[in-house]
Image (cartoon, rainbow, N blue to C red; front, side):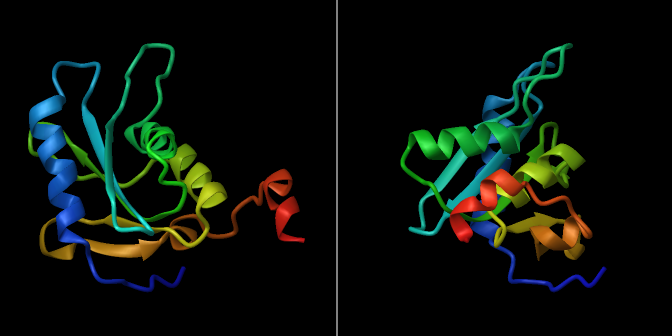
Length: 137
C-alpha cells in the first residue's frame, strides 16, 4: 500500500472533536464525524449505537450531508468521545466511503502523526460496487 499524504484539515478535526465533547453522551453516541463538502461547508454527525449494530458516525454523516444539500464530500474525520482523538473508519465505513466518494481524503493517525490519505489507500484491492458505477460508462 502506498500512502499519499495530503494536508490535514485541522478545522475539520476540531469540528469533530467539539461535537464529540459536547454531543456524545453515554453509550449511545460515542463517536463524532465531520466532513467538508466541495463547497467548503462542514457537516457533523454522531453515531447511533445499538446492540443490533447501529450506524457509525461516518455513515450518519453521509445522510446528514445529503439532507443539507452537500452531495460531494472532499475530506472526512471521525473523533472519539472522552478525548480519544482521531479514530480511523471501520471496514464497512471504508467500503461505503469509497463507493460514495472515490476521491475522498480521510484523516487518520494520532498526535503528530495525524495525516490525510485517499480512501482508496485505506482499502487496497477493494470491491467495486458495480451498480454504482453505471453512470460512469
